[in-house]
Image 1 (tube, one colour):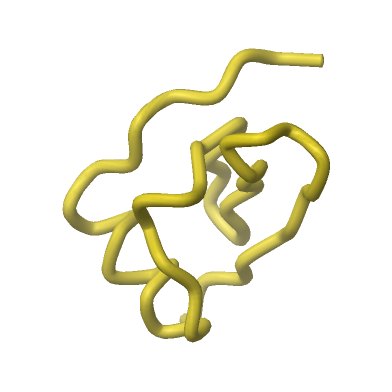
Image 2 (tube, rainbow, N blue to C red):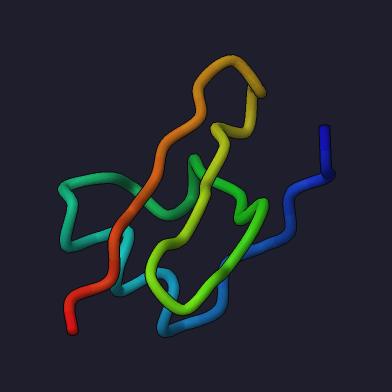
Length: 52
């Protein structure tokens, strides 16, 4: 499992649009079509799809 990194401002906006608190999430992977985030506790993993 990869280590999460602190989300950038653009990534925080994407996370907030999904009704999630960016303070509680770390970015595992950022691709062209989705953002893979994991909770700071490491128990949850979600995909946040970017709007085209």
